[in-house]
Length: 420
Image (cartoon, rainbow, N blue to C red; front, side, top):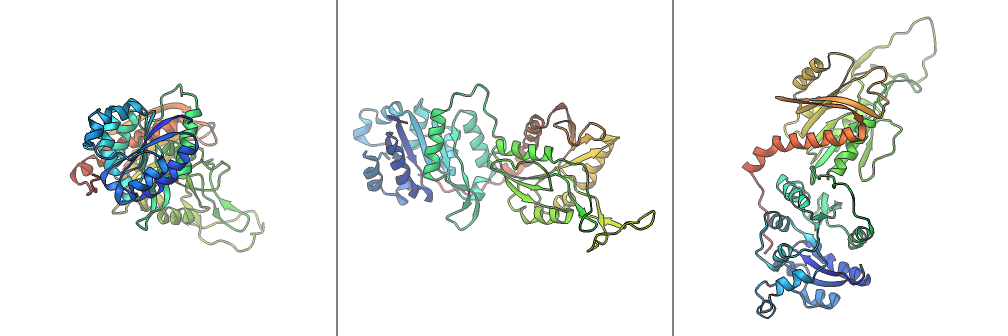
């Protein structure tokens, strides 16, 4: 980053208090930093502090007569090698998405040919709102880069996604980008940006005694691939996993569950703020009516085991009044379409992904073929690697989710503070 000319835009959010440290870290790498603030940013960090750290007068006013006599905003836009906005509020994202330029900072973003990098920071509910997510997708499609946000404690006292990355993390990301070769392939579309997705994966084990249990052949590979694909699509992902022999996907929260009862409890405990629920786990339909405290000894030629129904996790989520967009899975040995459509109707879910299982297909493999059904539509996917299939399924789920919530989004939007 040596000799890089960076415009650091600071919007009016509480995370602005971190920006003096960010400036110090950029200058420590020999970058030249020009601070441009919105009017409300001064409520969180003073121009005196910013000027002292950056070594340059802070610019804020588009109508600065001395600067604009020489078309100062155009001069600044041409000067920059990079425009970095941290924190980037919901209002800033909105303005840039629609091409608004009511102040100096947004005008610079329209007038520059330099890369633009945004570091979002806002309340978790605002970050997860469909309007904010749509604005982010628009900006990403135009080549704007987003860093973060992080998940954790927020100034408002809540916990969730929306925290601005720490200054050290921002600089590390910028350094990594500067050193990395240009990618040859198209960046993955962030179709779930700002969303929280829960995926269940793997089998369950229903104990009979301390050494025996009822289970099935699920490896969890499809569920884990879906969790990774949702993460790559921009979502915050919670993976509720049965016992599997798979490495946890990076940057995914994994919640372990042994039995169907455990999975039921884990799902409902962590379901808050989930936008999309994908039930890919092969949960046992039945469990032992009574679990022996001691190992059952072999006696006689036969043995009877009484079974009772396990809790139905998918149906319980679909019955919630404020339920997420709900996707089920159906593994069948025959009559695939008939059984899948029956499950779609019976459980009142939004979509169902169905596949045939049996000898050399479905379970324990790295590839799969599926048919997807929803009310009024269906789509088939040929056999392919489960990672590639997961990408395609997540893209389809995101598309159906957006269509499902589109009318509600237009009908009611929250009040967002204007950053002027």
